[in-house]
Length: 525
Image (tube, rainbow, N blue to C red):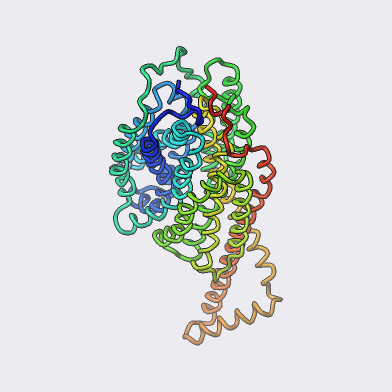
């Protein structure tokens, strides 16, 4: 049990030691977060190198995501059982080892297994890093400490594609994993040196509830599989997706029921009795949708419509990530003066405005047109993320903070997966809808279309092409233009939907705390 202090339940450590701990755990979390997105830009190269199909190589991403969400809610239990420092350092070492396995993989199966291991060990880094920060810093320094974590959590998803694009373009895809070695070694050395040593005994009296662990793994694993593979499998037209959906529902219902009844649960769901936490988890899911959803749609638009390379796409996202990093310290200071809910509302309005700007995309859109919307989105994300962490977690007693951060990070991760799954489906369905509308309007009765068609045919014939072939080429060009226009409009629809979701969740802010933990909560044990 930690020794509480009047300043908020933190360990009595020197200020320099506290910040060395913060840097250590933030570096570990950065490794995990960057590896979520860095792989996306290298899938084509992996596919060619390993002789895999597009569907098969997708499991390199899916396997990581499934393992990640399974371990997040278990991080508190694992930390209590083995010791917080031991668990964090072990997760770091194992994550680096799994990264090396990924880099040396010479078959698709080996790569997928290594990525699953990466996801399992990486999930422990993410939730444990945030809980260690809450347990280490007194309440008056919490905003600054969480700002450091926020820089990692928000900038990481944008840094991944930027770094990955550069590595894939200039080196080899295996180096996206090998780069974890020097940073991982540094994180291990710092965590080993500066994290507070664990007590002598962490073994609980009760044995391991293997049945609950199985239920959690099957439930969350099946749910994540549905979200990751649903679109490619035509959702519930697929027997596989129906089976995974049913398995997820049954296992998670039984798991929740069991955790609420047994004396020593592997996931403490009672922590959700704190109103600010369960409301924060719901808004956290929306932040995940906006954070990962927008960063999912923009690169697709850049590569499919603007024909950007992976490296160019990464550079497109970099200014927004830098804007987030530079804004974070200022937001930490604002938290001492303003109610966190007010800052979250301001951040939501900025994101809504940025989505409005992005919804005005057209075939003539350039990277310059995307610059300010992405900057505004980055600043808005910071105004939501940091105050949200404080409002949702600030009033949770220190003894429950590990369970609370696990649930909070899980909802953000699942929110991102849900957002990407929904946006993927919407992009396809809205593109088909807009194409049908455009084709209907550009029929044989439309004089402008006929003039354009005749002009194209005349241009091809003037270059010596046979009239019949010239007509086919002209029709193909018109069809491509219609497809491009439909695709652009569908991207605009998805950004409007993200904005609408943010608007609908604004009332939940009234259920959150003010972001300033009370002395009674902070000192609870």
